[in-house]
Image 1 (cartoon, helix red, strand yellow):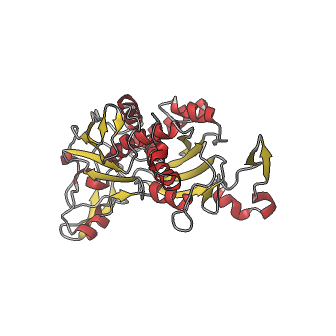
Image 2 (cartoon, helix red, strand yellow):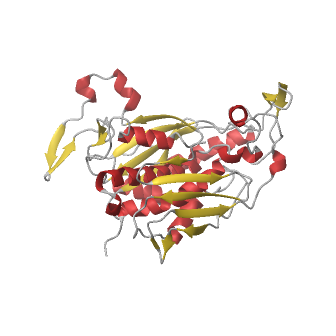
Image 3 (cartoon, helix red, strand yellow):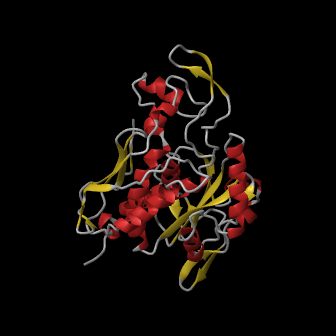
Length: 363
């Protein structure tokens, strides 16, 4: 199992949904990066279930930092964060019957029945809490360099929010809202669609969108560690993400070059583009414009409707009706997870470009 990601700055995840704890190790961070415990707690609260549109399983997420931090700053050694699991109900998960569109069957084929199946085990969204905790440290480090980022719900069950244009004000708007949308008018219709699915014993998906501002031009390592490659690799590690496009993405396939090209101009001594169809990246390298990309999020596969499945204990057809605690949509909670894993990826890419000490506060 490949549980680590990154080159200069590396993130490793560990733990299972119903095990004693989950957590992360963040290795390669420069010494002297501020560790704001209140901000970590705040970011974890953004991922925590909130109201009837989310799962009833609520964890306190009272994390501990076991190593790599002293006096409020990173020491430069591996930073380890552990988050206990306290609210588990393993009896909700029938042993042996694979949940459609989950990792249950695929994991059985890979781990031969030795995998922890309770609550999805290591494949559960619960594991992302550690990513959010680590991401909070990286987000704060990026802010110190004038780099801001956020993720919002671009669409959910057919209800649309407006897209990012690339301003810091938009990022701050999203950061100020527990339900991350740019237009306040989109929140209630989205919530109602989610609740409607829950009442039907079903679930819905959507599209989330990330914007990064202040990223210097020249970040990315073509060919195979291009900025798009790194971001896509990181984002696809999150369960539920099934597609990604940068800038105008697939819409560019129906454009002419004269429409899709982003004209270059000088503005205040800096190079800018008049449009941003390429999403701030050319040749796998940041061009200084806002990096904007959209991700498709599938409907939560855990639903309470009767589904066709198989019993892996005897390899026979079976029916399954789940009775556990599940999200009717994960688009709200996944936003902070995406932002967090993107922040870790940016810290890695920037450290490769400028050296690890570039992210640290200077004394």
